[in-house]
Image (cartoon, rainbow over all chains, first blue to last red; front, side):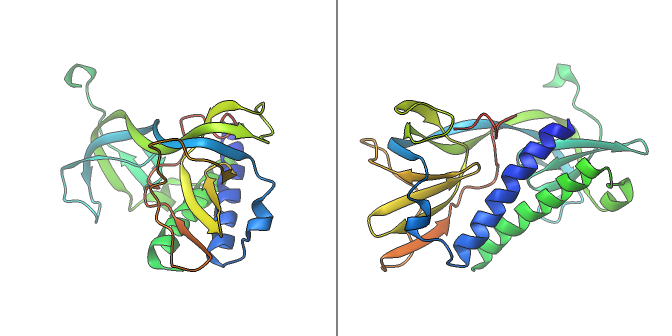
Length: 102
Length: 133
C-alpha cells in the first residue's frame, strides 16, 4: 500500500513542480521538444473511483446534500473513526449505504 | 498566477502533504477533527477527461501505439507548438484527429501562453500513474 502511495506521490510532486514552473513563466518550447509526441489526438473520458453520499459539515454544501467526491486516494482508520482522502480533501465516513438500497 | 491556478496547485499540494503523512505514518485522527462527514456513503465512479492518440518517443510504448493519457492539467503553446501536461507527463501535441478539439483555451494573443485545464477535479485513473501512457 505504501509503495503504491509512494509512486503516486512522485507523480503528483512532479506535476505540482511542473505547474508551478509553468505559472512562473519558466517553461519554454525547447524544454519540451524531447517529450513524447501525441498525434491524431482527441479528447476522451476515463473513469476514476470516488465516493458518493450525503454530506454534513461541509461549507461548500448544505447539510444532507448528495455529493460525489473528487477522486478517492486513500482510507485512514484511527481510534474507531474511518476517513477517506479525496482530491477534495478528507471526509469522515459515517454509516455505509446498505447494499440493498444501492 | 490567477486564483484558479493557485487554487488548483494548492489543492494538489495539500493532497501531496496528506499522502506524505500517510506514507510516513505521521497522520493522526486529531489532524482530521474538523473534517466533513459523508453519510450513507458508497463507492462510486466519476468521469474525467483524458487525451487519446498515437504516441511517438514514449519510453514505455512503441512508436505508433494507440494510447490514452491520464487527465490533462495544463496546456502550453509557443508559436505553432502545443503541449499538454497530463497527470504523468508532458506531451507535444501533433496533428489533431479530425473532429477532435483541445477544450482548453489558450491565453492571450501573444506568441506563447499557458493555462491550467478547467476540468481538473479528479486526477488519475484508479491504480494508474505507472500504467498511464
